[in-house]
Image (cartoon, rainbow, N blue to C red):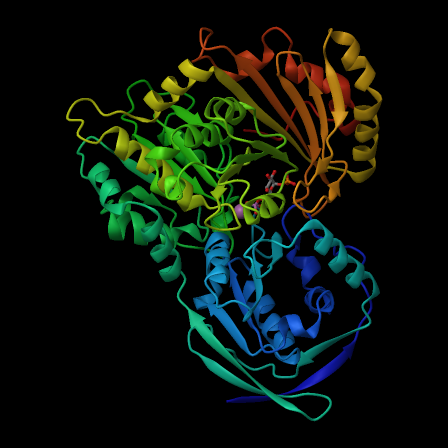
Amino acid sequence: MITTKVNVVKTTPFNDQKMGTSGLRKKVTVVKQANYAENFIQSVFNSYTPADYENKSLILGGDGRYYNDVAIKTTIRIAAAHKVSKIILAENGLMSTPAVSLLIRAQPKGENFGAFIFTASHNPGGPDNDLGFKFNGPNGAAIPEQMNDRVFEETKKISEYKIADYTGEISFTQPSEFEVEHPDGNKTKMCIVIEPTCKHYIEEMQALFDFDLIKTLFARKDFNFVFDGLHGISGPYAKAIFHGIFGVDEKNLFQCDPLPDFGGGHPDPNLVHAHNLVALMDVFNKNPYACVPDMGCACDGDADRNMILGPRILVTPSDSLAVLTNNYELVKALSRNGKLAGVARSMPTSGAVDRVAKKLGLNVYETPTGWKYFGNLLDAGKITLCGEESFGTGSDHAREKDGLWAILCWLSILAQKNKGNTGKFIGINDILGDHWKTYGRDYYCRYDYEDVPVDKAEVVKGNLAKNFDMFKGLKEGNEACVFEYHDPVDNSVSKNQGWIYKFPDGSRIVFRVSGTSSANATFRIYFEKHVEPNGDLWADTNKIIKDGDNLPDLAIKISDLNNVAGRTGPTVIT
Ligand code: VG1
Ligand code: CO
C-alpha cells in the first residue's frame, strides 16, 4: 500500500493548450516545462463535476512513445487527488487507441470516467519530437468539440492543481494500491489494475469476424501477406493475430516492436513514410521482375490508421471505404446487424462511397475532418461504417477508427471471394477493378505543405477566400465555399472546416489547415477527379489530376502557396 497526501499546487495558465483534430499534441520539450502536463490534466478534471470521476475508474493507455511514462505517472497522481477509485493501466502503458475505445465500452455502465490515451498518433516521437494527450469519454469516443472548448477555457484560467505527493516508483506491470489523504483530512483508496495490451481487443475481433473463414485464406499457398507496424503500438496486436492465430511467418511482420522514437521514422502509413513496404509492394512499379506479395498493410503509431496495398497498387482510403460499403455483406463485422444503417465520410474524403451508398439506398453524412464528428452519428445509430481519406476506417463497434479491424475487413472480403476457388487467386487488384468498372474511379491525391510560418499561413488563408470568385468565373457551374457542418444529432454547428472548390462533374480541390501539427501550420490540399466506368481506370493518378483542368496548378494559383511560403512544391504527396 502506498500512502500519499494531496498537495494543492499554485500554477499559472499556458495559452497554447487547445486540443486540435485529435487531442493535444506538443513537442516533448514543451510538455517538459514545469506544470505543463499537470495544468492540462487538471483542466480536464475541472471541465467535469466530481460526480463524473469520484469513485469511478479511469483507463490509461498509449502508443509507447518517449515521455509517456512520465505523463502517465503524473496523471495517476492527479487522478488519486480527485478520488478516482481505480486506474485501469495498460500493461507497460501500451494500448492502441481503438483498443482503449473498446475497453471503455466494456466497462460496467456508470463506473468509468473515461480514458487518457497518450499518443501523438502518426507524428514522430523522441526527445525532440511529439507527445500527445487524448481524452475519451465513457462512450469510448474522443470528447466532442464543445467539450474541447470547455477544457481550453479551463486551461486559460487555471490557478492551482491537486496532486498526490507520492513521487516514488509506480509499477506498470503489477497491481498496486494507494491510500490518499485529502486536504480536509479524509482518506480514500485507489487501486491500479493492470490490463494486458492485446487480450480484450483480440477477443472483440474474434467475436466480430469469422476467423475460421480468414484462416482458409491464409491456408492458400498463393496468398502472401506482409504487415508493417512502423514500430508503433500495432505490432503486438499484429503478432498475436497474424502470426499467433493465422500462422503468418514472423519474418513477414516488419517493425512490430514498439519503440519510443519509432526507430527514428514517422509512424505514418502512407506512400512516403511507409517507404519500405511501398517499395516491397512495388507501388511505383520500378521492378518488373519483383515477386510482389498479394497484400501489404500497415498501421500508424497508435494503430487507428490502416494502409492497404495490393500488388503494385495503393488502395486509397477513400476507395477502401467505398469497397467495404459495397461488399459489407461479405464481412461479418459489417453485416452482423443486417443492412448498414448508413455511412459517413469526412469532407475531404472522395465521393467514391457516395456512389455506392446511392446504389444501396444508404444515407451518407459528410462531416468535418476528425473522428470525433462521427461519434454522434454512431451513437444515434445513423451509420454503421465511416472513414477518412487520411487512412482511417471504422465502424459502430468502437468510437475510434481501427487499423487492424480494417485489415481484418479486407481479409474477410478476400477470403469470401476465394471461398471454394481452386483457380487463380482473386486479389485486391481484381476487387478494385470490378469496383471501378461498376462505379468509375475517383482518382485521389493529397499534397501537404508542412511547417508554414503562422504569418504566411494567414496570407494564404486570405487568398483562399479572396479567390472564390476567380474560381467560379473559370467555368460555368463551378462552386466554391467554406465547409460548415450542422450535426444532425445535437444540431451543433462547426464552422470554417475547409475551403472547397468544386467543378460541375464533382471533381474537387479542397484546402484545410491541419489540426494535428505541434508547431507552425500545415496546409493540406486534396485533389479528386472522377473517371467514368468506360474511361481510363488504370492510369497514373498524377497524370489524371493534371489532365484537362490541371488541379495542382490551379490550387497553387488560387492560394499562391509556393510564392507566399517560398516553396517549390509540397513536402509530402500521398
Ligand atoms: C489528421 C487527418 C484526420 C485525422 C487526424 C487524426 O488531421 O487529416 O483525418 O482524423 O489526423 O488522426 P489533420 O487536422 O492534421 O488533417 V490520428 O491517426 O492522428 O488520431
Ligand atoms: Co492515429
